[in-house]
Length: 60
Image (cartoon, rainbow, N blue to C red; front, side, top):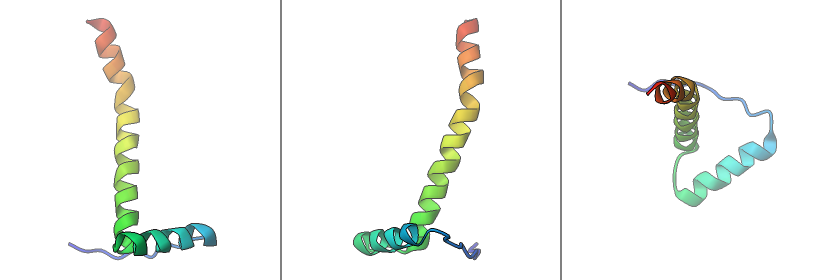
C-alpha cells in the first residue's frame, strides 16, 4: 500500500543535497528518504535493545 506524506525541508541546502544525490543514483528522492528513515528506525531499535542484551550477557 502506498501512502503519501509531504515533507517540508526547512534547510534548503539539505533539500538540494537530497535532489543532487537522487539524480546521481538515478533514484527518486522519496526512496532515499524512505531508506534513511528505515535505517534510523533500525538504529533506534538497536539502541533500545542494547541495554537488555548487555544485562542478559552479564547475568550469564
